[in-house]
Length: 309
Image (cartoon, rainbow, N blue to C red; front, top):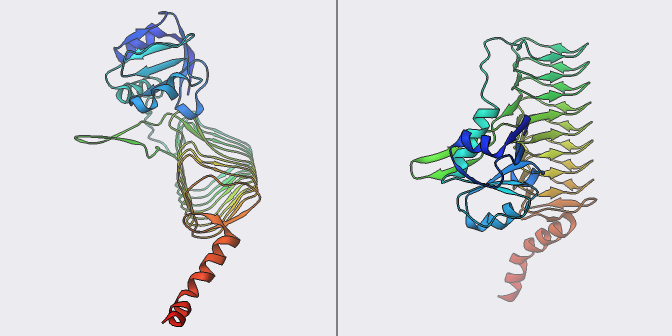
């Protein structure tokens, strides 16, 4: 998430009431999660296991819960609760905006686009030309939709990321300040849910077609001309490259990559990253031909036991 102007390190420290290490005028351009940070971004870290990763990331401002040595060219924000203070910054720079109308006045809708009844379109939403948005669709704030997109009834774009920190009193949610971006010529079925990024974008690539009842987690990036069948659940921070086919009832773990033109057969659990251009099946996932051979051999076990007796 980029800020609308450049802020100083001192100004950011004032917002969250914390100490800082570095030049008071050190420039701060935005805030992001570790996997999408760039120079000028704030990243937060609250566990020693991840200190090195955060300090050596592309982020130049690290919100951290220990006063450690500051790398050259970077700055630190010292907080007793970086998770809380990251949320404070999200609230400050991307506060929730109430709406009491079906289509927000700040929304932009392109020529030839049809909006069916009972659809909600939030603040600062951008919808391109010649789209069809069917009834009872909810499009949350800042969502961007390209041209020639079809979205079927009951689909929700831009709900919060499923991201929590466990505390003694319960689960504390990491607030979402990102967006959903739908490229041109995408088709989305009925009752799908696509979560916005925590600080970045959840992206559905050009020409991709998504069946009914599919879930896409936060910050996931789906490439061009993919096919994703019903009841598939895609976790957060997944990269699905171009022309991937995913059949029904597939589930993935987070933070993996599915290579271009891979085919994931139905009811597969994608437990790790997989290469493109191959077919996969099973849980844990394996190349489909090998997995089917294993299943055929398992069927022979009763016969083998009988012979041994």
